[in-house]
Length: 103
Image (tube, rainbow, N blue to C red; front, top):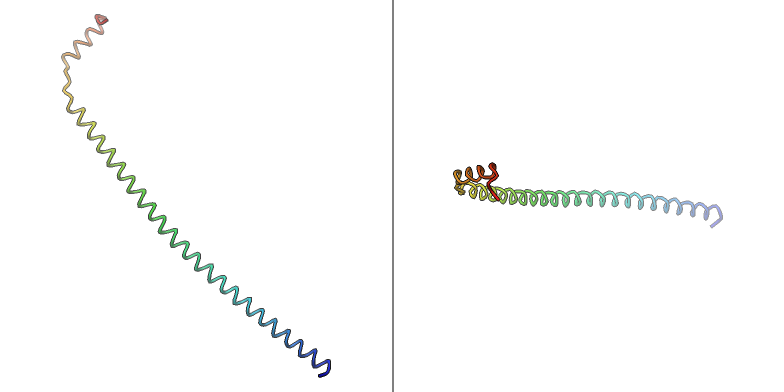
C-alpha cells in the first residue's frame, strides 16, 4: 500500500468513526429525553396521588372538627336550656346590691 492509499483508508475509518459517534450521541440524547419524560410522568402521577390523599385527609379532619364543634355547641346549648333561672331571687339580689345592703 502506498501512502495515498493508507491516508485514504485512515480518512475513511475516521469518517466512519465520526458517524458512529454521532449516531451514538443521537441515541443517547433520545434515551435521555425518553427517561426524562418517563420520570416527569411518574412524578406527576405520584404528586397527584399524594395531593389527593392529603386533600382527602384534610377534609376528613375538617369534618371531624366540625362535628366535634357542633356536638360541643349542642351540649352547651342543652346545658343553658336546662338551667331554670330563678328570676325572683335574681331580682331580689339586684335590688339589694343596688341599694347597697350586701356586705
